[in-house]
Length: 245
Image 1 (cartoon, one colour):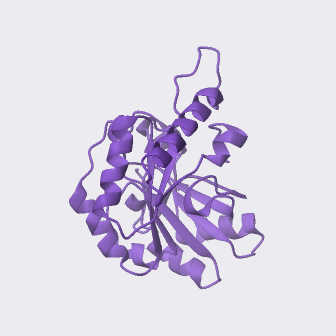
Image 2 (spheres, helix red, strand yellow; image 1 turned 90 degrees about the vertical axis):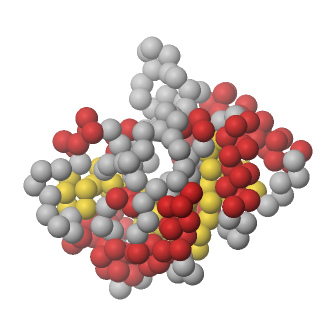
């Protein structure tokens, strides 16, 4: 983005506190820093405002201090979990922000597809690696995914989270778990269903989502994959695909 300076973070939105809607931190009050830009173009992405370059004009280059001022304003200076999301937040230089926040007792979680490895992953409190399954239309670089785990080392709590739409996605999730058996696995049904013509941007096919959730629960239990945890996207159930929640 033109006008960016070294060390600035490209921000799509900062919002909260609200609850974390998915994965290992589900239900936890959180402030979200959503970065702009992504090296993937998943077919069912629900955050295109932070991915597609047609929204670049809405992404603000912000200094660490400017981002931090907004986080502390939203949290009322009371330490809580800060979630770094995107897009792909691994593209952005978040290391200094994490160190800044730790000085004041805040904790940091990051979710990424594992396509970019950063040395500051080791400074996180929680790293959620969410490699994308076949339904996304993306290919996984297994070497880079392993590099992400190596960069993180024993610093953060590390979990694997996979979205599942169908049998191929389910088989992919099992293959990821088999490659990295050390880490807990979280599965969630995908929520993307093409909206009807008169629907707004927040539309969710809730009936279809619940049917997919039941299918996934049945699949895991019949396979006796007892190590996997199946969770919904709680924020989608509450607010649909709206921005800023």
